Every structure is written in C-alpha cells, then in structure tokens.
Length: 305
Image (cartoon, rainbow, N blue to C red; front, side, top):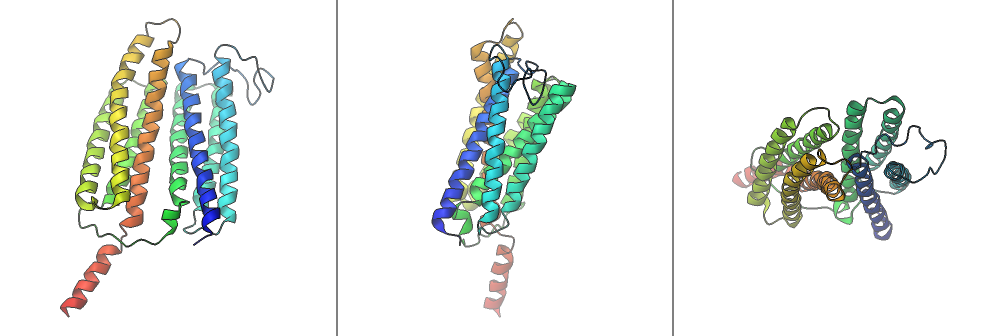
C-alpha cells in the first residue's frame, strides 16, 4: 500500500477540491437565482478587464468565474499528484477525467457568453457540472486509506445486486438534476421534473431497503445509506420550498434574498444527494465483489465432495 502519510495528504487534497466544487455550484446557482447570467458580455475578460466593476449582477458572474478558475487549478494539481503517487486501481484515470470535464465546462461557459443559446448550453453546462462533481466525490473515496486496504468480500444473494441498484439510482438522480436544470433555465416546464422526483424517491427507497436488509452489519454501507436518505429527505423539503420560491419570484421585480437562498440550497443539496448515491455505489462495488458468490459456491462444492 502507498505511504500512509502521503496517501492521507492526497486524500485531504481531494476532499478540499470536492468541497471547492460545492462552492462553485453555489456560485453558479447564485448567478441563475439573481438573473445574472448575461451580466458580463465577453470572455475570458470581463468588460475587457481582468477585474470588472463589481456592481449588480456582475458580482455574481465574476465570482462564478473566479471560483471556476480556482477549481480548475485544484483539479489539475490533483490529477498530477495522483499520477505521481504509487496508488492502486488506476485512479489517475479518474483524475484526468476530471481535468477533461473542467476544460469542457470552461468551453461551455465561453459558448454561453459569446454565442447565447441560453436554454440549451446552460442546461448542458449544469449537467457537466454534476458529472464533474460526482467524479471528484469518487476521487475522495478512491484516494482514501480505506479504499486502498483489502477487505473480505461480502456475498450478495439478492437480485439485482446492490452495486447495480446503486448505479441505477445514481443515474436516475443525475437525470433528475438535469431535468431540474432544464426547468430552471426555461427549457421546459416542471412536469418532467416532478415525475423524475417520484422516480428518485422510489429508487432511493428501494436501494436503501435492500442495503439495510442485506448488509445492515456493514458499517460503510450503512453510513452511506443513512447519508443518502438524509440528503434526499432534505431535498424533498427544499423541493416544496423551491416550488413556492419560483412562484413568488415570478411576482417580484427584483430577486428576493430568501427566494434565492432556497433555490441555491435546492441545487446544492441535490448535488449532495448525488454524491451520497455515488459513495454508496462505490462502497458496494468495493465490498460486494462479483467473485464473492463464485467463491462461496466453490467452497460449498468442495465441502460436499
């Protein structure tokens, strides 16, 4: 196993990078919530300057660009650090995938500013942001001491496997976040988002029930399940509040602070729900190995012989 001290330092840095991405999501949601998406007409400069006049919506748009730049630098540094470390399981591929995603995000941001197409590009931009975030969340686990250690395989006799359920749940949550982004940016109405919410609640409930019944004694899976249920429960409450906030914001001439806070919280907790599902899924893949049932079966046959 790689040196414990260096591995822990790398893991802390990956956590910092993921936490910085949460701040970036907040900055992006503030841009949308404050109707500041078109506050700066040029890119990469802002009104031809490195630092524009920080007034009105320009403040939110510029803060978003600064946060994006910081996250990009941290992501490149993380990928280089992982590549130079003797870490297992080819984690470096995840690191460079994150770098590619952050570059794609920068390109989408430039397209949004320079060429418009707000509804389409903004929705794609929000989608890539969530994929980028889940990649960094995965790296916080893949670079941990726990992931690098050997663990006894758990047998999953249920169908479908918990890892498959977790993966499907993660995909469903990601799609729901895309539907939410499309609604916020005016691509279509709220009905697809509401249907998606019902599907997410069903999948999370099903996955959590199976995880508890099959692996209730496995602490990593139990904690990940609790985290997933907690974030989803919070998101449901915020969903009702966000629906009210959207309805009220249509009546307001200017963005109202309380309404903006609710909308931003809804976006961020949605991302955290996705992160919780990613952690549960990766834990399931790590602990419930495909060879487990084969090994148990082989042992049984030997005992009978």
